Length: 302
Image (cartoon, rainbow, N blue to C red; front, side, top):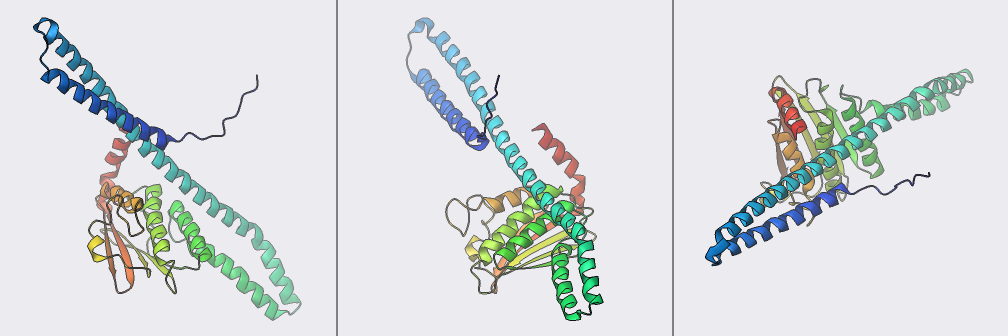
């Protein structure tokens, strides 16, 4: 028997959203029905028993509806986590392929340069070396930490900035060895902030983004700056709330996700937007590593 291949991917977000809406409506209708029965004068015969039956039935239906809503919300969270992990894996695959390609071509480059030097084509050899150096530098630029997923993220974002004519300056002074936050969540946090910085700086005359990573005995500090449009001062307090954005209605989820992840690790994020520079500062204490196992276990129980 021939099995038909299903090409259409189920939309878990849409399905769970519908489940939440339908069950919420069901709860409201049940509450109205219960109030109607309780406030209506019923015949003495069977009136009390009818009320008991209605209350028990309504209670069970309401309990079931709340369970459905909880499951739908958890499904949406899992779907977001899966998508973030898939994105991280794709970025790591991209970096891995580039590293393999460079390793494969390295011997060829050496042979070409050696031949040019033998022929005393020194100027041509110098030009060729400069080209190879730029290619190698583009990868070595992001290989600053021991967190492979983070290096892969930087490679992807660096390429995206080059494509859009944005200068990405990276000052990485930590290997992130003792980072208490899982690598895929670090990528989610920094990736969202870099994407926002790219959007903000795209209209600048000379767009530039600066990513700085520092480490001391207490913890880690990330700073992502851009020279794009400033964030109004009256938005500094609520810019991290869901739906709040300088880009219009329906945007502004990235920063709320970032703050939610950081809050689970006793970490903070702040914004400063003045003097033509907007800077987001993240502070992640190393002490948060003690809370990480409990948080991971809690997520698994969900």
